[in-house]
Image (cartoon, rainbow, N blue to C red; front, side, top):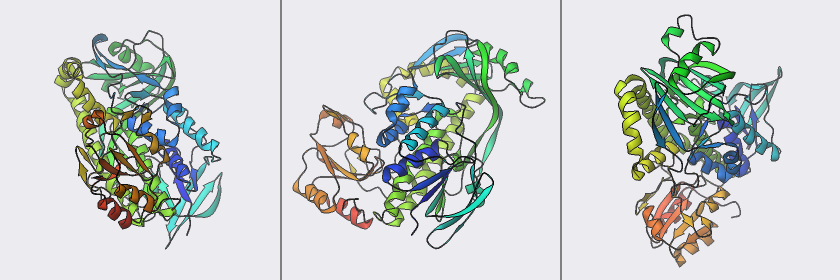
Length: 501
């Protein structure tokens, strides 16, 4: 049986999948049709759940060191400051990364590429997937590099090749949805005026965003191109847009480093898997930029799939596990597209939202800690749960199987440290008994336990809770130390075997 995986596309999703497979010891090739890594900032926002994944892979600290923590959103109307919405550590106590991180996509990608290089893995640039055919136990793929074509065999192919995915198109997978009528712009420029940071500005129906990038002297500008400038198509340069931006936001545009116009789509592929081929990231779902969810969702796809491929390729789990990739991720993608679409339509289409709710109501609501924490859970994707997945069994206290393991601080660290193995493990919050210790011994699943505290109660963790935790940090089984048979049944049903077992 072939063991190698082919990753098509070396954007954040493909690179994250590569890091996940490398962590699991799975051989792979990663190819990209471009001549080299991206040189523009594009996606900027990295959320907490993504950083938690990267912590498991050993690169989170490199990203936080390179990025800018956004501590607030500054709101402007007709260039005048009207409110400040606090962000800062709005998820304090919920995640080791309780903030929104701003980091240019090209820097983000370069960190992941360097990490792969340190492991002896190179991205194959100027290399394209031409065609592929599925056989009984492998895939035969035709790959073109620098004009020369060769055939190779792979166990699986993963399409991380963007909205115009070659992989998705070759599988004839439908990509239903729509396109917004508005034309957007994105530009990275030098800002010649002091700038407070992450800002949103309004003027009539006009709406613009600004974020610091790389250094505080450079700013990312995002907005909708006014219809008056679209008579002959989108402007070829940023110059005609500068007056519109400066009327909305307190910036002074200097040198323009990069500018592009584009339309926003909202689409979800009909399926995310066909046989031995999977699609991830923008190849599987695209949506409005509301909440900065796109890139983070693709990385979540990658981490969900990486450990499942590893379990099957290493004969450590039943192959049925692969069916849960689509089950878990397509459900989330559909909900996300619907949510971001509603949010986008409200902001763009409702004068009351722009003139009253955002500048006057939202700042007051964000002053309420409980509400601020709920917003953080949603935006950060730490609230994402697979409760309806076939891989989820049981409920204890406020925790249900499928939920992300709640983050809990302890005197000597936190309960996320063991997750850095990116492997199956059991957690007990209280006193482990003979029954669960025996399970650990029989199946070779590491057991991590700590004394129960009141802070755990606040996180919904009941005393003597016992969790079988998946490699991605989500809970497979939620039970108590007194009822461990469900863990035994689960391990045997999916034929889970530890690497050293």
